[in-house]
Image 1 (cartoon, rainbow, N blue to C red):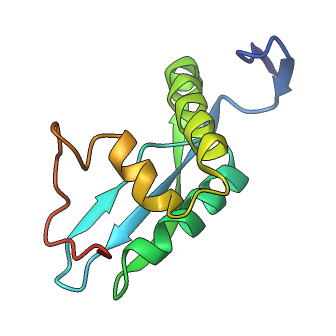
Image 2 (image 1 turned 135 degrees about the horizontal axis):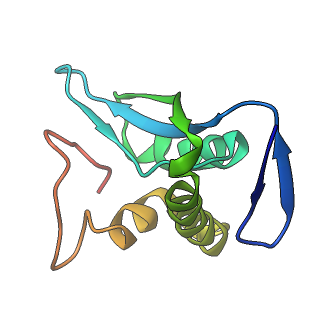
Length: 121
């Protein structure tokens, strides 16, 4: 048994030496795949997938859970918290998926375009 303290201060006891990190992936028709930042909550991954789906017509979106070592938990929690903050902030916006992509750097002056992406206009 191991105990880890979450960023919120909550103490959690786990019976294994690791955790699973969930990633939303966008699968393009030409076989390319783009993965979004990882999260430690399956529910958060599901909400992110629902936000992104309308922005990628013709693509398949999926969630993969990858086992990680417990020593990687603090960084994974920080990354997940950043995604959670964005998802919460964008709830109810007109195009939350588009805004999410813009805020993580896929649109705007520092854009890193998705390969072969045909995003909704």
